[in-house]
Amino acid sequence: MTRPPAPNFDIPRPPHADAALVLADGTVLWGKGIGAAGMSVGEVVFNTAMSGYQETLTDPSYAGQIITFTFPHIGNVGTNGEDIETITPAARGLIIKADITEPSNWRSAQHLDAWLKSHSITGLAGIDTRALTRRIRSKGAPNGVVVHAPGGVPDLKAAWEMAAVWPGLEGMDLAKEVSCRQTYGWDETEWALTTGYGRQDSPRFHVVAVDFGAKRNILRCLASTGCKVTVVPADSTAEDVLKHAPDGVFLSNGPGDPAATGEYAVPMIQGVINAGKPVFGICLGHQMLSLALGAKTFKMDTGHRGANHPVKDLETGKVEITSQNHGFVVDESTLPAGIEVTHRSLFDQSVEGIKAVGKPVFSVQYHPEASPGPMDSHYLFDRFVEMIARSK
Image 1 (cartoon, rainbow, N blue to C red):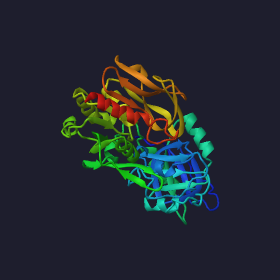
Image 2 (cartoon, rainbow, N blue to C red):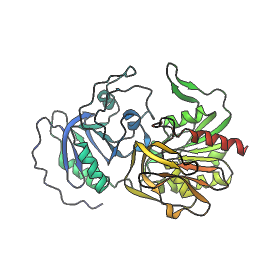
Image 3 (cartoon, helix red, strand yellow):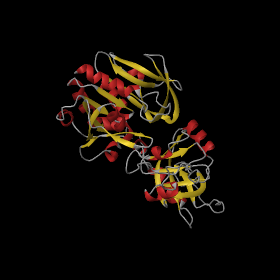
């Protein structure tokens, strides 16, 4: 990528500012560093959720992204070892308005700042997140670098150079970076007050989950619905999946450009569909299922990220309040005959769900396991299991 001329970074630094967000166009937003020291590059996006910041930061779908939280009080419930979606967070950094709130929750085990340091996540506070969010909404998600230099002066020129040459997410396959490396079994069920997580010891069906960046709570929902779950890597072939003799196949969420990941995932999905297996996809899995069925995807300007997105189920007429995290979307105009839209965003009318007519194949763009409604969308896991039961 050709680098534009360097901006003038001989600009005044506010007192006590030891961190900054530097955008690819040369914009500098000063702040107070939080988390780990260093520089981290990514696509700067915003998330409107009022809670669940630990789950958001550990969601593999945020690989390659710097998250701006629009809610001002981040850190108020602390962190713990249970509310994580993966062991190693993939988010590149975070941006918040106010200083990290002191934790006030009986489940808190660690201050958010200490947790960020333990996972080498860089961030900054003191940014006008409302102004940054409005900028992203009007101009699209920019490439940027969070730089944190405790006790020193952030190197703005080096940060800008990193942002200016970073290629961005379009055309980038990130699923392989966050996917598991080998097949494993999953039997942990959803969390419950006083008992914590449970175990599925009497499954009715066997589901193979293809891990493009799977969130743990999705796997828990599958197990809670009566499934033995076998998780396989993102680059598994149809033969790899089918050798486990699954009753159904689940396509997980994940990061990056679905067209790039689809280079190896689409043939696998087509092979599974041709074998007659029930298929359920979420988020990136929904997008790649659409590609496998003949549709196309494109990158959105700002994407959907938050826990307040209304989606209408066109089959029942009900509206669900959903959790979403995606920067790409299915192009409805390219859906082939025999594929129906089942769910639609009430924000922008984009495709939020599809099904293949006459086949046990469906998917949704949002995250039914995340429970912002709080249980509005859990019926989709039941629908998948009912589809498996009918197919047998």
